[in-house]
Length: 485
Image (tube, rainbow, N blue to C red; front, side, top):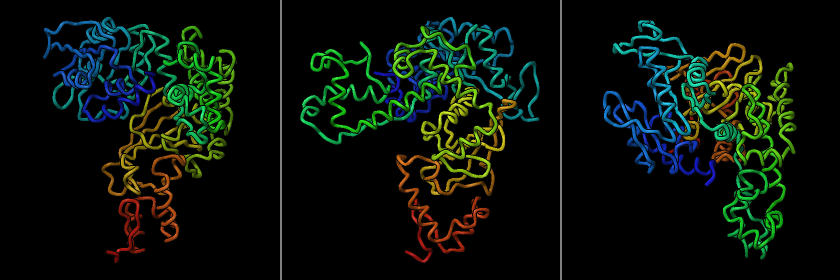
């Protein structure tokens, strides 16, 4: 099973557990899977050890206080989750990191508390950390400081996954595959339009080939397809087999998948410019095949990617790309896009966002991405009720400043009158599951004149006042007059 399918297969099961965020992300991205062993170094009461085991994976853990007699055994994936924060002695802290790395065969997960806003004045400075109200030691890192600390201690290149969470890979190809897959577009297999007899006769054998092309945007190379032999026996080569698929489906949709995949690679390669770009031989075989199929050579692919990256330094490039974008909601100073629509944006905007997320990793649970056109900033906005609330309130934001790389967090949960959203269909693509429902509500609101006072309805109280004045209320995504039963 491919890395991508493994991710999708386990996503639902993971969210049904209260597994810790670092380990959850590792399972989501198939770092932890049925073929790997997991060891939690400093496991505390052993909650993650048990939850990982409950998912059917091989799991064990050790803790100096709760499980000191459990042997320290090597594992494919080792978790060092929020251990560095609580070790007062800097040398002991470094030794714990190195010991966990020694036990790691494939990937080390390192998670630590990071500073976004300054710690409370009620906390007491102690050594290179603080003493909390509970009289316990905590060492806080800046995001970049944590990466530098891991890299220097282990002589490696840690990959940011989320705020305060890094993956450290033993294998360079596995690391690059993980980094690249985060930029994969979301594609659906084109439907059968003309069910020709030849396609119907071989449909079961052709489906794996269709799924492969949907993921990679190209035909497979030798050894990449599970049912390769039976297809080659029937058709002689993959191109002839795919010709049968083209007779039954829309060729333009397959071309669009290939085009998006080539853009995915450009975005990935553009962002490798910031690090030590891997040698072609260090890439995973499937990535090497992708590059050859779409660009002919690694040099050409890097040249195309770098041209897009360097264009970001030109005046008003981002502003122009935002103004021309057919995806998202535009205002005078920003473009707002739902995270699910990121793949559909101009590669320039995807690379620009990648410049931000390469610092913080995945901004988990963010709903919208705000591209500021009047300043060099990207904001991640959190609307947890985006799908269920017709006009969800802003819960929090994370702002990344490109000039300083400063990360600022703002909390809106306690605000009595938070900002709210309107016209939700403008943030997503037309294939978003609730697009039609969002659009229908907006149309009804426009017909009733609810959206005229833009400056007044942007907050919860202003919107409630507008609804009261029009004697309507909204339940679900339906409008009701107050006197209706």
